[in-house]
Length: 351
Ligand SMILES: Cc1ncc(C[n+]2csc(CCOP(=O)(O)OP(=O)(O)O)c2C)c(N)n1
Ligand SMILES: [Mg+2]
Image (cartoon, rainbow, N blue to C red; front, side, top):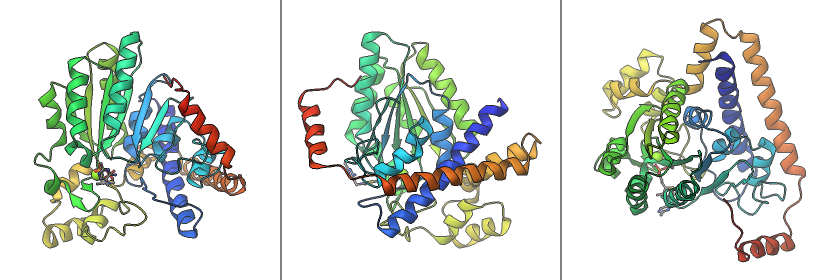
């Protein structure tokens, strides 16, 4: 992989982590209202997949979508302003954290309803197919969403009509507080796609290079006219489900091991104290995804530690500027709300 692509992916992962940690702080201060679902731990998935996408591709995501929006190119200040409910946000301050939207970047929304992304993405795929365009739709969803009816209906249609949809499961092992083996009869999510004749792969979602390669291959198949593809990325969220969730249902050793499984003592504790996940499962997921990439870049002499620190400083500045912009921006007015309603009434065509 080219060094410039790797560096850009690392930059995006660092920005993602810093942005989300800042969002948590702003939420605690009361600058962000409502629900806030954060992405630390899962960065390699959004970054790896979206760096494999073309500008003409469409993205559909969930309520845990800030990072997808950032990596797609929506400026950090515009995303932060939306979290703050400000007029300068990408949804005019009327969507908030779970409803980011940006037509220019073909970011077709974060959706709060679990399983909502499937029919939206499949519909966009149908529109692309009808026009015979070399475009694709990337549909992100969690492991918990595959138990919704919309998953099965949409995968069936996408396969039947050979629609250009890349289904990307962000398997972080939990549906709020319920572990995957307690919410899903088939815990290997990728196997479900076989029921609809959709080629599917399970990959290490902590390794951005592996994710990027899998997404590149899948998109190549889609663009060659071979219909939908499916990738399951095994990952882990370091925080609770949302800011309202301390995540205390998870054994402490599990969280610690995922945050840094380089320490063999932690693995040993997991082995002796809790049976799930097993050391083998932990090894399959790997350590913190940002550390993984830093090690690859620095270890190979392709990037100095000074360059890494400069990148961290740049990211910190971008995030600080985003918070300032969001704080100073005005709130939307009632006239803005009315204008948004009128726009919907006139049946605007989005794609
Ligand atoms: C139809 C529907 N049912 C229930 C909920 C409540 N809910 C919000 S997030 C969530 C868990 C989804 O888990 P998963 O798909 O694994 O995504 P993750 O949060 O882990 O990224 C649930 C049940 C909802 N938003 N929509
Ligand atoms: Mg989940």
